[in-house]
Image (cartoon, rainbow, N blue to C red):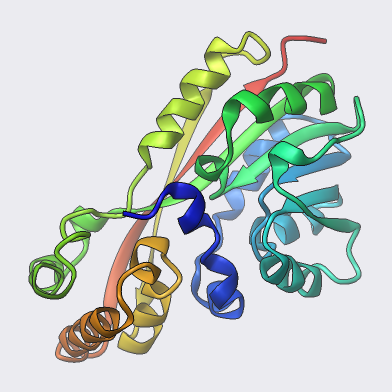
Length: 258
């Protein structure tokens, strides 16, 4: 089974597809983040991907320095945020040296589980100005509520049994991050907020989305193709529509060191 760091490298292979098919985040997430850190001007973003959250922050008037380890993902993020007050830096966050007291907010969207908390949290603390905040969000596909789940499960058991039944949810590493935040003494208790919404996909859209997930991308190519064909056939047999419920989870924590 590939190690998490190996899986983290696969997204750049499909950076444009990732940008086209991965969902964004509800506007209320960013409204709540800005209410948590009123008057925020500067943001340091951990792992910006193709800039979906980055753009949402920038259009609200924030200056963003976004650190992204994959050059292809960074390329798309630069294009998506062109003309905004956004600087994209290509680096692993653990190796980035932010300027002390240079940010009012540290933000991470769909990225914390790829980052070593023991290295990143002290760096985040040093980068924050007094009373600065840490905010992290990600989308959880609520697979248990998705129509066609039983048919899709059968396709996975046949073509990709190693990931069958592993609904996309909050990774275990996210829970470790929350514990690390609260035990670091650099940040206060984590305030957890949730936002429920849904998106409807055609067979083509959904199979393209699946190709952006690391557990699918690390399957043998022939079996991935068979799985995607089976998934597409199921959706096409139901009016070519699949409703996928999501829950976005947001964590908010304030610096305690300044």
